[in-house]
Image (cartoon, rainbow, N blue to C red; front, top):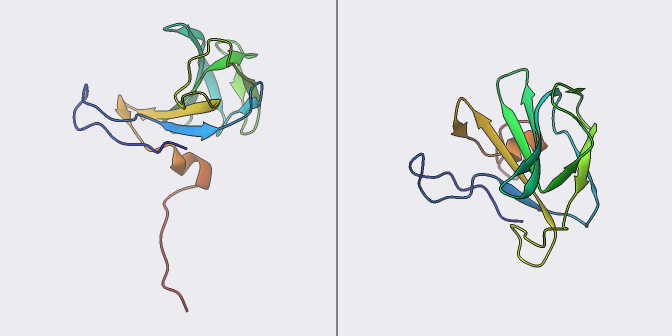
Length: 125
């Protein structure tokens, strides 16, 4: 898994998402409910973007979409399948899903979408 690394500037270097190991043709599920605002290719790779009610937009790639723009999805709904047919992956030879999160043009760590909020380390004992 490659973690999120925020860019220092809008066009700066960074990793604007989270790469999650997955098997080829795995179902790609919505991390939160919302409306599909994009379903199709970007730079030769299938992508799906969901606009959530709180203003956050999640993006998934590479995906062979089974949803259409305008569809309303709930958390856990299938958006498509992981598409490894292009042979290009964020994870080299291993298949993986790239999950991104943006709000008002700023990228955010999508791990927070998967764990349900802020993480806090508590003292032992």
